[in-house]
Length: 286
Image 1 (spheres, one colour):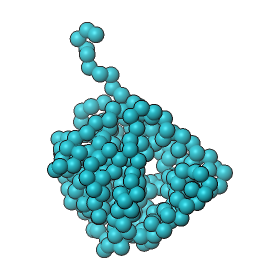
Image 2 (cartoon, rainbow, N blue to C red):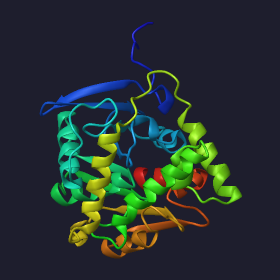
Image 3 (tube, rainbow, N blue to C red):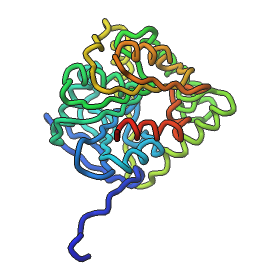
Image 4 (cartoon, rainbow, N blue to C red):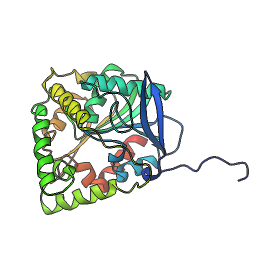
């Protein structure tokens, strides 16, 4: 091997090693990849999602340039403990996880429920977050945010009847283009074959839905305190977290940038990954 026995940098999410760390009695499952050193990009995942739910076409381009960390929230996948009853408590868990890893500064990439958690984290720990990416998400108390549960259960039913993955209904339009994008997305999530994560349990899923509902029905947070560079993105036809809420976020966070993809739903960034990944990379590296 000679003197350079250092591991080559892994930049493929399908190859990222599964790791764990314990903080306040909870063992968090996480994966990391990309060049070590500097400020890491921590990924905050969506409702019902585990480590296996990140699109490699988004993660891999970022990991070419940056140290990326994905993690399972408390009570989900391979992380221990119980899913918290509020989004704010999930943000506290994220804080415990990040500080246990020894970081006092991170960049955030978040999607959907992950974006709600990220907002609460930034408000509570403004010095922790340097840059913020919020996709497919909306503000606390946002209009119709609390309808997520109804939409979700309806689409799970539709997916069951057609033997599809619910994400094909929840994340993508049901036109020919959307159906194609949905199938391609689900196929990409299967690229990792070894060491896959446990799926979320029903109780944990229901607890997350309740937390989102509470977040939707709460008084809104003062997002004018968010001074971090912020990139917001969505499709123009998000049925889960209405697209108008992305515009609402941009309005509330001074100086934030908004990207809306045409003819696409909640998973617009996955449908348009070829366009979005370079925008995310540029935002995170400049």
